[in-house]
Amino acid sequence: RSESSDTSFITKMKNTNRNVVVFYGSQTGTAEEFATRLAKDASRYGMKGMVADPEECEMEDLTKLTEIENSLAIFCMATYGEGDPTDNAQELHEYLSNGNDKLTGLRYAVFGLGNKTYEHYNSMGIFVDKRLEELGAERVFELGLGDDDANIEEDFVTWKEKFWPAVCAYFGVEATGENVN
Ligand code: FMN
Image 1 (spheres, rainbow, N blue to C red):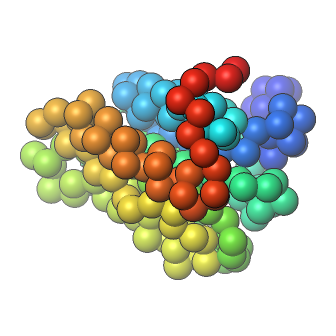
Image 2 (tube, protein in one colour):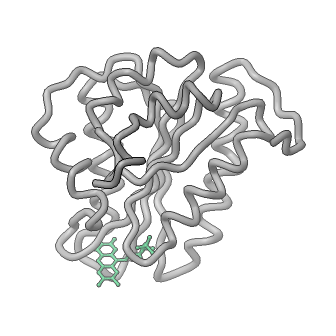
Image 3 (cartoon, rainbow, N blue to C red):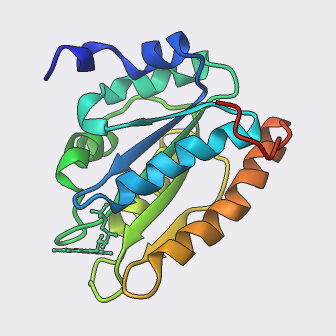
């Protein structure tokens, strides 16, 4: 663990005035790219986003996200193997599986990345979405599922074009249509 990663993502969000954090579980970069795009999009909707690698974060800090006003956690999660998380999302998976932290009030949304030709289609995205709800978090928009066997880019764009207006309505913020940062 490098020194810079010792700073909690919550501290970083507070210090840089951000309210949206986009976590990604990615092996070959697609989920990371989607996460980066979502974090950038945020500024067009009156929010401010940043990307975070779950491997470099203390996931327990999710319990503190509600300290930030109008905060939202987005998860872009790819599935591998037998429905497994990516390497960088192993700890996040363990935290959600074994942890008993109450995540009451945490606002979240999940976009899963998978491929229909695999038996365990999108299991990681499905798991994260379901488990967060079980732990008391509030889903602000329905789970999106991208299928790499067809057109995952199109699946993602279709999802996020509905996602952002829903987020605006949820938080009562207006889309500016412009990037402000
Ligand atoms: N998708 C699934 O839905 N279930 C799987 O079990 C699954 N296993 C995979 C195993 C391998 C070796 C590869 C290359 C892909 C697999 N996929 C599976 C598809 C990936 O999740 C999908 O291509 C995703 O977009 C990759 O995201 P990434 O580039 O962020 O790692």
